[in-house]
Image (tube, rainbow, N blue to C red):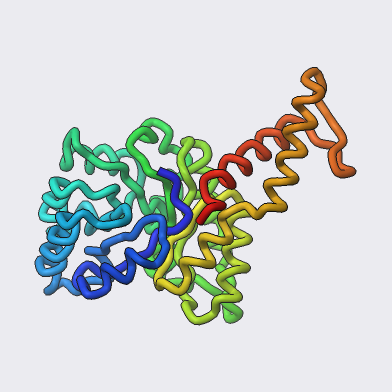
Length: 280
């Protein structure tokens, strides 16, 4: 399952589920954790269970509560409603993934760990390869990490702090090391769509293939940012054609640039994504 955009919606707001599903997001995340007050967890769980049983028009992930919370075992019951995936907060490494699998059982859907939300978690971001078969990808979060440290996630101009940039870089590297999708974290300034577009462009440049969203208005920009343009595809096709015409060449000049095997690999990825998404 390739994911450009995953839109959060609070699990205790079933009135918003249909709007989220109609946003154009590749998947929605029905949130049982941070977006739901402690006294409303059961209500949210019931609403999510009912929605999952209604044949939703888009893939639905569910964000469970943390493994150590008293709500985790109740959340696991929702697996019987066949969500497309589970978002796991506060994961501190592959051992936590194995612990979740022990709770969920053999029918576990793909898991998407928020893999950087504690200081300890950052030091395990390169160790997920042994559990990669169970993962839909890897993602990260800035606010939980910095709140655990008594720090701030962003500077006065909105840029990520050095600590968060480190966690972000290790997440995208860890995801690629595990061979799974790297999913960028949310962009909290929901009214600044121009800044969001720049953030998405940076994420794609740095190796992320998708991003989580907080508001439906963010979804079209995220989708567009992670979809290769026609110009991207045309350039990629020229690279593929050049190497096909010279099968013994290790290095070729294309559009005035010297290119080799990594450029060919990237061109093939671009064409695959263009074929998948450009019709949207």
